[in-house]
Length: 370
Image 1 (cartoon, rainbow, N blue to C red):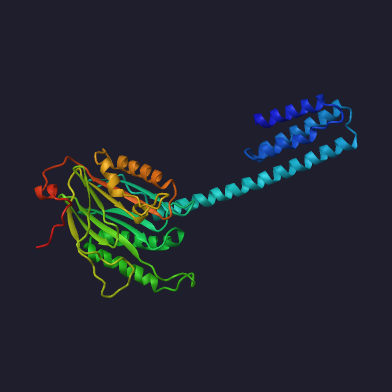
Image 2 (cartoon, rainbow, N blue to C red):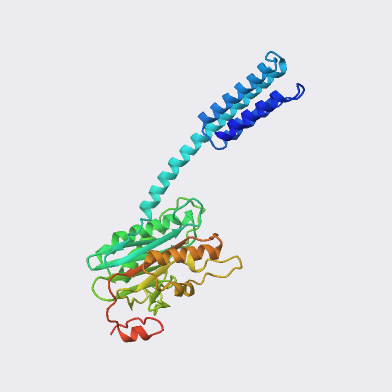
């Protein structure tokens, strides 16, 4: 408020000291107009009243209160101040409605994409999500984690498309995962349940007949048993997780990819469940292609695996995630064309004895059945 009041005082003094032929009083309208840009309607009304009082004071000092010139100036200032207060009030009402809508939207988005717990079982988790659509907290990427009687089960996925149009499919897959995963079906059986749910939804009449009916989700399903030092992974056409151990970063590529969820192909392969080492102290990085395919201004993809090698000695998933987020934002100059999600997992505890072959291999080799 100090600046508008200072303007009123300065304009008033300048007008009084100016020759009679010079009239600076009309400039007082600047004060309420400036106040409306940052202040409330009440503050704007107060400054407008001060401006009108200052203009009347100028008229009294100049002995021209009853002249047509000053009467018209006072009337004009009153009208402009009144309209300024009115528009300020309308803006406040609009902002209040917008804040309420945003609050409801954020609550709905938190219910849909629940924040992952920092610790689930013996696994510490850090996660981050950035939607491509402005003002949205979720889009077509998704992740979830839950406890089962024997361990922890995770899902990360990416719906075809991006932004708000993909939220419906993301909600469907997340709901199906939470409904089925705790019953502890095998990972192929869990994938089948997710597939059946998405395919059933595609058979329903669309809310928008003009929308494309093709929809599928790439995903990675992970089982982390409480007993043991290994994990099971089923990859449904998704970028392979990255395994961080002993200063090295390796991609957990599957023997055979499963078909993405929602393709609805009767003879589609279910893929192979691969078992990889995951002992205390090891780190697993799950991500969507919004991270690995993020581009810099020159069009180059973000080299996530290469960048991770610089931070393999981080003390916590939160610290590693902070490094990745800062580096990715700088790489892309803050511009993202797709939804992006990343989840960092670290098994708690002191690293125990490991299989020597797993330590010496260039990448953790899947444990072959039989």
